[in-house]
Length: 432
Ligand SMILES: *Cc1c(COP(=O)(O)O)cnc(C)c1O
Image (tube, rainbow, N blue to C red; front, side, top):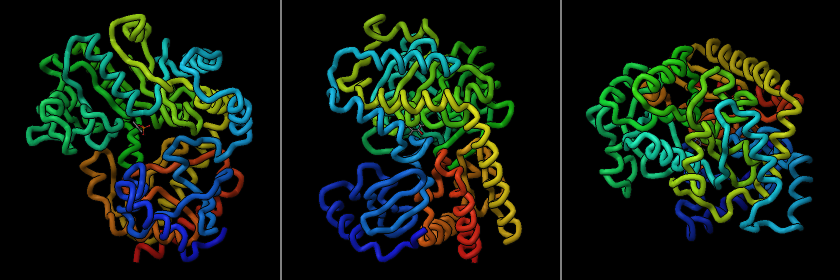
């Protein structure tokens, strides 16, 4: 483990980047605004380790924001990509690999009978919402505060003053009329959902079955079954946004882990094996409404392209052949959460470490996390110190108190133990 050095090159590149790109980045959190300093620029990565242009090496828990589950540059994924790449990178016509990937996804994810590939999670959730609206003839949608479903207008909405009535845009540029079709409920609070559904105008409840975009907030045992029941009672469709949890918290996603089957599912990240792809699917009668089978329009020039199908197939086939990996994630994840939880107790400061399988959240300065109300109270300053202390010692966490971090198979070779030592020390020094 090489400790971070001066980071001269990264700093210079970041200065150049800010001249020509908003914030110097192609996705906001990469700018390190929440933790201070400037981001390291990546040169290459292998397994659990990431190398920067400064020559520093980090144990990586960003894992491409959860898109990677085996490790960086996994030999099987690299070989699959090498095999297809010389044969052409996009045709805009059907390929065999698309069928193979679709069959595999349908066989692994309980709710998915028919599936469509798209290019990003944002596209997957926006497409699913269109189907739900078409199928129900209703226009309202319920989301949960603290959940993220990509950046389409309907989901860039926060709770308005009258909770469970009208949402307000959480970004300029989102038309108030669009935002007012989105109702915002509280995670793990079924009463707030019942309020939103009462007038039977809601097309869909969209939820991250394990919240992963406010750190990792697991569902209470009755939450997902309760959503299923409430949706059935009100003629509303239940949509799981499994862009993060799909193939992550179980081979069949959160719906397999918790035994609750949604009507429609959005997938992304792991499904494309680190290539830029995503998918959505669900009940056949709903998915058959999508063009050209039905009238709901959705299309994609690069959708299901050979790079995505190759990386996705290599990854999902490996996962399907090694289902024990999920048990190993559960055990290792429990070990990390217990260990860091014990460190927090020893320090005598409040804090919670959550995990579902190999997906984590660390919430410093609070006692319990069940919804955004709890999560938003975390000690951001402390997180910043903790993050920087870990980084200086060679461990890269997501640069925000509100992001989940992830295990990859490549961590499980002893790398995780070295990282745990670092995280323990980082917690100790940052608590002061
Ligand atoms: C990452 C993520 C998205 C957005 O996916 P993109 O590929 O970044 O557009 C949507 N929903 C959830 C739950 C995510 O974690």
